[in-house]
Length: 176
Image 1 (spheres, rainbow, N blue to C red):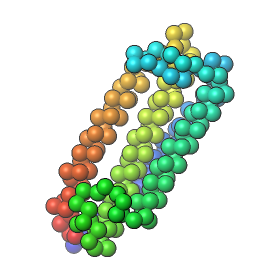
Image 2 (cartoon, rainbow, N blue to C red):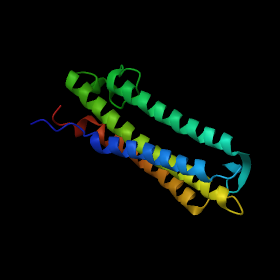
Image 3 (cartoon, rainbow, N blue to C red):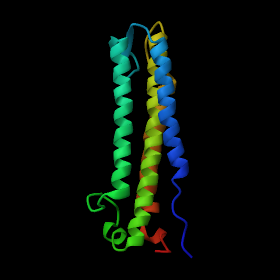
């Protein structure tokens, strides 16, 4: 009996929701940011560089669009491009048959969408934290930013370990 293909619906919805949330927070920022906006923060969270409102909005729009484009291109590449240029664990095993190539493409797309969604959520927090810092008397990042950043780093590290030790290992693909 063949194992069902990895579902892309959940991660795709999460990635799309993170893009929509970023757009909503950006729109809110466009309505509420003051003329002078903190756009860089030191290690302690204190603002150390400021920009004009228009420059900050253009920067955040550009970063959001660039990230969406990069993840979209990566998704297209993993779904249609050559697998030989990707660093896949057990690459020879995965590329040996059409069924394995199809399965690894589904795994790569799933994991790419999870990474896109997680990065999108982090970007929403970055933008929202910047908006909050701009409204504060003392512009600085709050604990929410640091908690989200820490959760992102730990979450991505754990996800990569899961990928390499779990879902991409041939021993976890009994039906292939």
